[in-house]
Image (tube, rainbow, N blue to C red):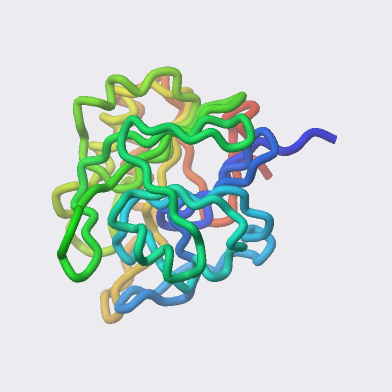
Length: 253
């Protein structure tokens, strides 16, 4: 039986990419609470975190790099990261491999390239590098994981992308610079031109004391903007735990 090739949205910026026999997990945040942020959707099934081959860490912010979450994942997984994330990752027993934009790692025949991201990715205290990165995973299919970023000119160079994982919201009432909102994410999809664009970074975390908001508002606005700006790109809305089959770019199950 062939290995599955699919994308499972775990929540926020955490996505499980299963491709050509590898299990790749992005920005793992799988705990009920991170500081003032609480998870408002169920925690992922434990089996989603089993047998992870590669961890990708786009930057060092707490909602993208959580040490308790990393400790739930086998230390045998290769951990590719932006430079500011390295010390926190090392403290969990994982061995960080720092990538800068343009660097490429080969993992089991799959190419994982670090690409630019426009986002201040400092970890507290605000010392050292603020570097954030995105990743392009290329095997039998290609997947772009944006991490956190604003629009940038280099998006035009991301060619041949099958599926783009694009953030469409934040966790608070305002979206500061260095992020994509629904309209900006749709514009990114128009520039990149993937077969499918999956809305991520929405509806998973909220600040303690914040009034509940319509969780699906940002991704649905993204889908509406996508129809106007990039009608040839299939927009995909996955809820946490749902999957996209990479064979046909349609939601699975």
